[in-house]
Image 1: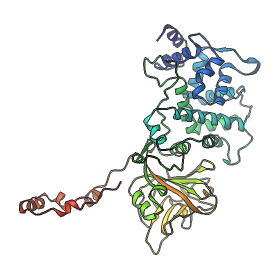
Image 2: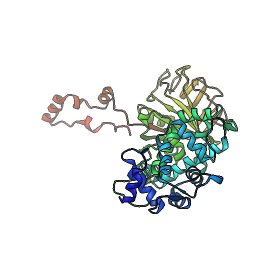
Image 3: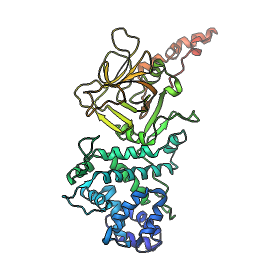
Length: 452
């Protein structure tokens, strides 16, 4: 690293021990080895990987707006933008948002909701740009199979992040107060994660030691996106959801399940069969079910327990329902009842089908066993907080249904192992006697294939 970067790094005490050399290298590349950065040089430097709206917001913070605008910015101010967004206090992050939107922070000044929504959309859009240009195996595991991030879904994810700033998710107020913004910043984990990943990439913190290249990429590992497992044999997957939907749902899963999604079932691949679906999802651990109805509404639920046939409800209060289209929303458990998940088939006294939330015949999600392809979503569901009907109509036709196991595949119980074991495996004496007698071991050739 050159002397210029060392001098710059020494000027800022906000950065941790390892950060100054990376931030200074990015500053030097953007400023063309100068002590200060010009606005046009920074926009050009960040241009390929940043949403144009976010570029404007960040230059508002760095250079000011209106009559107070400065033609250049120094290293300290440049470093402040990174620190405030990655690990700043709530007040520091509020200052960033106000300044980015061309306003001075004041507890009495309200922010127009529309501006805040566009700010969130610009963060999400920049993150998705970084995903698209990433060479990470995790990203490739989705993109190589046909998963994309459409502009409309990127916008919908930004709207979903912003919508929680007010009380009513579907009817936000025209302005939000500083108190509402403060509470929102404290509780909105997804926004914090998105912002951190965006700024880590913009500031080159992810670069390998000794990398002096001026390019701000390659992006860091996009930890909000799980790895896709089980799609390797498919040249192309008929994707119902896209990357924005996956990030949205995955961010609400318990952290221990966020690293991997395991493909289990899709009507587009395995056909419309309840028996086939249950055969592929039973005993596969926690899972996400995703339904698209004939009107194009996309919704689903997170089942915390492994699916299994039975007369009782199972699952825990970590379960939730969600929508992906036309809007992205999440409905967490109320703990009012424990009707999180139910599965049954071939019974005469109980409903046959898959249910998440609510009561029989009035579930948050109901998938009929026979005839498969019909479903229902009730008007109300006391199992999940803030719930609204997930599908366009109370009863619907299923256009597509898929199930993904989340996290690592659970280990088989000892009883399961024993069911898959030949008597010859557990009784070596019998095996030896057959060998001595020259008898053929028929059971060795009749083992069932393990479930995929």
